[in-house]
Length: 338
Image (cartoon, rainbow, N blue to C red):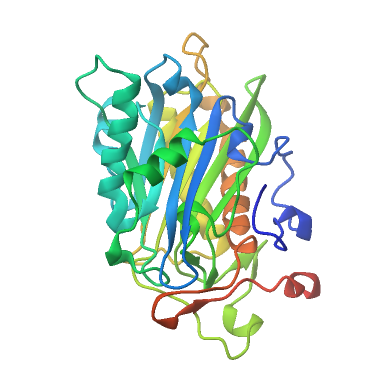
């Protein structure tokens, strides 16, 4: 099931980003072999947090590396394992997202997961990102346990991922509204080859929500509501594709993924740790696509991240958390009036 009951994705509201067709699920799981799992912690009071895992099936079925790249737009954050991805151009673990102060425990839990699958290996590089959900969740309690991380990893599936207030997006806020997890996909022909690109985002950053070029500030849409603009805002973007690309070309995709934040009104502030991780599931024997034909793929990445970010807001519900702070859901009726 996608999203929260009663909440809608962008497309069901008539908000269609670009002209390219989505995949069957309009999700990162449309990319061959990509699975997503969530663990959500929500006590209805002070804890609103969780774990989201993006699991390439190839990494747990005998292929121990996939081409990958990380783009750090603003490094005010913790992306455990990123330097080895930069150095070697591969990922060797699923991508796990969680809250800032739980990132290090989550990395240790990913080690447990990897060691069980590779009993003879002596080194691993877990890849764990985070955003700060301390505005709505008592982040200093660090409620994430190894079991929560393993449940997200082991429960990952290829269906339509839940969006909004779920997993690592349970306590996040973006663009003045309650946000969370969002996902989308596109199909495109690149260099004569049909390819799919998908994105999953953990949205927790500042700015003024912009929908298809129209600013929609919370002050105008919800008169009397104080903008929820917590410190430590960030955005984690995971891009997956079945296009045959090496690390350098995937780095070009990752950069454009962060550019797409500007389309939805991101402020790219001092305290916003904005990262994109891109990887390819294409079989290693497939010839690489040359740079000269990548423009359609770049367009697809920009569109898919923009839509995933909008979904992260549209599917989230009003949440009251620690210290009585409230982050309000986006009001759908203003879409139809605009």
